[in-house]
Image (spheres, rainbow, N blue to C red):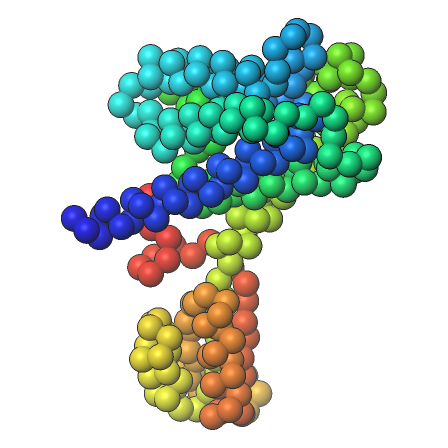
Length: 285
């Protein structure tokens, strides 16, 4: 019970941090510059320019409406984490609007602000994805489409984003529209790269004569496991042993240094992997 509570506390702590990154990126860098890429907040930017209500207010309203649709169409399958992120995002933006009212961008450098408007929400989305949470907003629409239709979700959401970006060209100006288009294209790339970076592990293939000391170091000091199999050199035909092991980057440095120190004649191949599934890493679910 305590383990589950500790795990849940950790997860929601990470989710809270990720959501706050999203809120800061959107409020301080996206809203003041009228960057309209990215789901609900993008819609809110366009709507706020066409009325007297703020983008934060529209974000709150749209998120609450989408939550209602989520409960209506998805029922119990509607995740608690999604609800938490949606509410925290909406409340956070509204709170910042009260605490730090902004009538203009923070700087006179729109490119610099675009970078932060892309990177902070993208980092947030990657963290949420990595912990199995959803950012809410248009993700709720995706869940509903997935359950009730055969419409390609990715294509549908991308087309919606494109419509929002194109509309910003008419509501604001061409420059804002182009900035928004750049943000739309760059955000997905940043998210993918951040997710890969978070999950990145090192796969070791060590060709050696005596695998026992290395294996002992792996499972005693690094608390990892390894697979050992026999091989022979294609040129020399000498018998060799190959150790395969997977570990985090910090552990990889320790193993590399150990092998270089105690078995300098070994051959080491180290490969990056962004997706390891199995015990000690990511589960199948």
